[in-house]
Image 1 (spheres, rainbow, N blue to C red):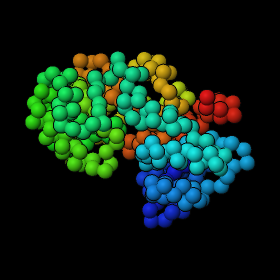
Image 2: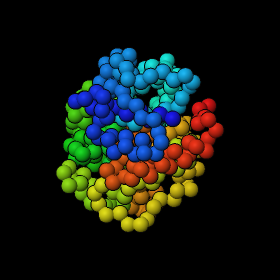
Image 3: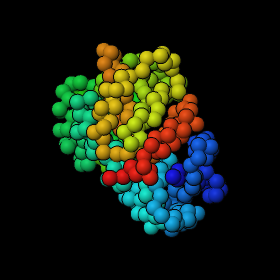
Length: 305
């Protein structure tokens, strides 16, 4: 079983520094570690990206742990590895399922904030889209990411019926995302969550959120989402979210959940487990140890349908 990491831009034979701790933990827990060039991958040079990876004599399963990829890049990565007899834990369809909110929205629709989306960025289309929210507060993001650390200027819209504010915040969001915009715009109902603290740098309100990580529908870890703020001992109802996880069309994914101000819990979003970061406080040894245990219980590491 392989864990594939991105290389350092300074030295392409060493791991990206942000993933160094995970790299060591993966090795310590018996995984074979590999390094690829993310930059070459982004440029479409698959041969160069995978130049340090040898072909396997028989098909071997792998998990990528690194930066987010656009679906077309991930598909090229997936196909390039197949040529070396290496198969990523999530195929391109499974990757897209959790990477883009609209692709998995129907699986979590009853447990997540109401959401509308569009790839058409014309002003009239945007204004028509937000009418559905009445005069309620909403947030704007793309199919993957928000600009939550620019909370007031490029994320939060206090009143969806305020056309000027909708356009102002949306334009700022589009300006900040620039060429990194993923597919289109998503507008989501703003739900009041249990407050923790204000972010020390951006001032964004931090709320009681957790990241649940699932491998082959089994829970790997439950992590406090934020590194700031004081969490108490309360945890979400894991069994409830496990039942929902069984419906998700992915072998390795994250589920971010949050406690609402009224005491109920919701799903904020899903993410592909290969490109979802771990909080700084996460126990990476425990992360890879648990993954190893789950994989050992699967005959021939056969996760794939």
